[in-house]
Image (cartoon, rainbow, N blue to C red; front, side, top):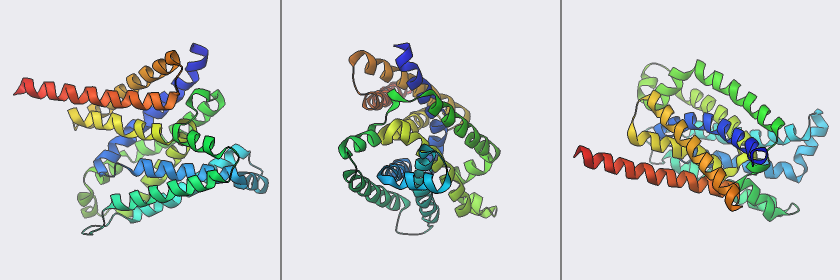
Amino acid sequence: MIDLMLPAFVAAMIIVGIHSYLGVHIIARGVIFVDLALAQVAAMGWALAELGLAQSVSTATGLPEETAAYIVGLAATLVAAALFSMSRMDNSRIPQEAIIGIVYVVASAATILLAAQAPRGAEHVEQLLTGTLLWVTWPRIWKTAALYLVLAAVHWVFRKRFMLISLHPKEAIALGYRVRLWDFVFYALFGLVVTASVSIAGVLLVFSFLVIPAVIAFLFTERSGPLLIIAWSTGIVATVVGLVVSYRGDLPTGPVVVLAFGAALVVAFAVKVVLGLRRA
């Protein structure tokens, strides 16, 4: 069991670590489905790469085909990041969530059409949704960890600015910050994370890693330190439970872990209700 599940566990912990932090920003910004949209755009890019574009980029640049595929997926994600950064419109009747939903729907349709042109298209779509977490290799894990470490360092350097724009955008504007520019930087960094995560964990699990631990954390506190501690703890416990149930029940790993996160959210709501009744 250890030999089979250890790489999946380590990969999941790495993804949980950075996604739980980013989830706090996403919840604070009120753009809950931006991760799902960017993940779907990344999946569309990977589907496009599978049709031979990655091989063409590899031939033209001399890069390994896997790296070329990542570049194709990232390019699609950065286009979406630019759109999201420009869609923050004050006093507009068009909410940003509408733009995010449109991007998600269009990317989903494009992914299905692209996958239909590839051999075993249905299997490819399923892999993009549920991921291949159980079959991740150690070289892929270390490359992803190195990328996330660099991105985490960038977020640490600009943490106050990112947090101010996420929590108090009007105050950031009053201070003279170029909010749309910093939104693009945030979403571009976010796109780098999501593009790598989708290739390992799939769209559904990446969304769960990002949103559910952050939602659970916000149920109990709004302080940044406890928020991250609760989010990370919840993500770790839910992931371990999901992996164990998946292994013992011989069930698909991605969907089982997603259900474990859903169960964790139900438990958190129950605890919140009990605590509220006791205070009353």
